[in-house]
Amino acid sequence: MQAGLFRFGTDFGNFELDSQFLPRDEQHARYTAEKRRVLGAHAGRMSVAAVTESDHAALEAARQFLIQTAQREGHPDWSGLSFLELGAELAEDFVVLTREDRAVLVHVCFPSGWRPEAVLGRSFVGIHRHVPAFGAVLGKASALVEAMLSRGPYVRFVWTISADDQLDHHPDEGGRAAWTDDTPRGFLRVERQITVPLSAGAASLFLIRTYLYEFRELTLAQRATLASALSQMPPEVAAYKQLTGAIPRALSLLK
Image 1 (cartoon, one colour):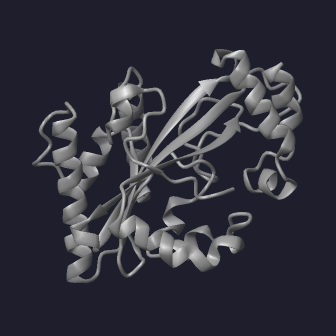
Image 2 (image 1 turned 90 degrees about the vertical axis):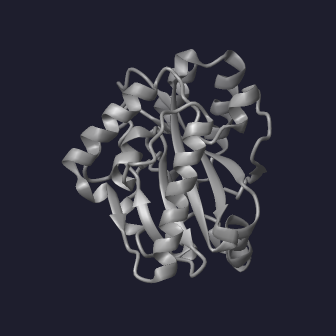
């Protein structure tokens, strides 16, 4: 469990796609259709807590960044869309954080086991307080927030495993399947997370794109790496990821 920040644009083997904030792929239509379904059923997946003038300025800066970036990267012109409409066109989820260290907008349809509504209005430390080993970096939290606001952009990757290919893993409203001894398939679930400084350091946009890879689609080397990571996962991290009972079956499927 570490920050794992890389400078945005680092080539991880995807060439020009690693330099795109909002890349499109063959799954884009599936993601946007599922977003519309989730937003229609659970309107609270997009929530706003803008109070001050600077809060609203941060939201507009984020909206303009998404519109301009989308058009530059080959998406349609979405300049007339509201945040809600814009979010439904993108495969990415996103959060807007202000210099006052408050999440003033949360648009998250595909959480990996957490509650987006609980993030709104909270600080960086408040959001991550329960992450294992976060106490070790607590003293650096202000520096991490400053990096999000005034440096970068940065990209990082967060991963877990799941027993299904559902995108929405909200604890109360999502379709997350439980791991059992008979679970037939396993999936590697990866989040590509990007922090984008906005408005000369007054705010930051946090982009989240979820990717799913079935175990049997992975190469032998990738399966071995994943099996090794699961085998060595500390108990507190496994509990945080809700994987304590999943690892034995996952290792069996990876073989």
